[in-house]
Amino acid sequence: MIMLLLFLVLQLARAHVCILDPPQRGSLSVDVPGDPSCYRRTGPCGGVKQTFPGTALLRGATSSIVVQQNLNHWVPPTQNRTSGFFEIKLVQASSAGTDVLLDTWSDFPAWDEVSQTNFTREITIPADVPLGAHVLSFAYVSYNKDEIDPATNTDAVFYNCADVEVVSNTSATTRVPNTTPDKPEKPSESSTAFTCTTPDLWSAHGIETTSHGDFLEHYIVVDNVQQQIYWSRESTGQNIQSFPTVTTITNFTSSREYVLTDGGTKCAIYGPDQFYRLSFGGAAFGMTGGTEIIAKGNAKSNDPQSVYGFSGFPLANGITWTAQVMAQVTTTEAGPFCLPLSRVTPSSSLQWIDAKQLEVIPSGQFTMPSVCNKVEVKLDQMLVKNGGRNKSIPGCGYID
Image (cartoon, rainbow, N blue to C red):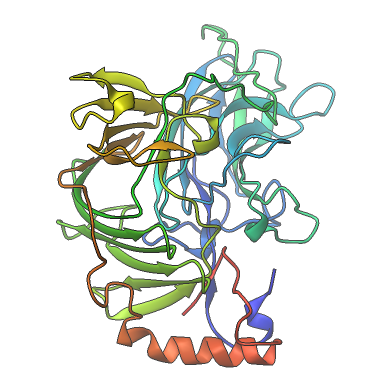
């Protein structure tokens, strides 16, 4: 991965996972996607010094841990591995000096790299963990080849940690913690699972409700053929924590994603991850096969009123989707065309209210905003010095 600061004095902000409660080591800010306070690439703490005192956790008791995926880097599974996953551990906490796995769950296809998703996870500190100071580690194993940093981090893992103090509580009820393996085996997929995919050109408008009761308005336009996406996410309130207003215009063939903040007056340039078409159902799309929840006809014959529901796969992650099959016979290898109706995560619910197929993309929809001109010039100058204007920039960071 190119370390941009070696070539040009520009801000490089890259962030992917944060621990909100208990407080993570060092500084913490999730006001915008990509804050550097959450970027750690060596486990378990990225070299950040210990914080005193640690947060107390009761041995043998269940506690709620709140974490955030600050940027999403989901990639489809391969023959050798599943898609990515998250895990929470106590580092070197066992009597043998090994890590104690407390929880693990699957990554999901957010289909929007700058999305931010909060997870509240219930963990149990085993009764045989020694009392005293420990490190609570949160890791996101993305398997994303565009996010390898440093070169030895071949699974593209992102880390953060919090200091905790395990204390005794003999009256607490012990619960057996999650013991899913660190790297889950490749999931099996039913050959009869229903799958569908979005059309070549489409758009949608939606309203997202956060767990705090705030609202965000979304508008997207997608060209699956030319691999371009416009995504506007605008808050209706003045201060929405963890879910800021942002607009992204992404051209995956040129490997540039323009990120507009501060009411469109500020531009940053990301290097986007690998493009994948928004599709539903099956391990290849990070979901279980579809369950028919509204059946007014034969969904596999593309009845327009058939609605299917999907959930995270292979490890439970609290993410669910619904999609409506379109009234046309055209299909792809992934199945008939469909349009999204909803996506529900542990931190928000996004309802699409007028998703539709497009005949043509609106003129200028993916044009680079003029506010990005100066940043684009600086980026090109830097890349020329580094071997060519056409070199891609890291997916895990942005130039500002």
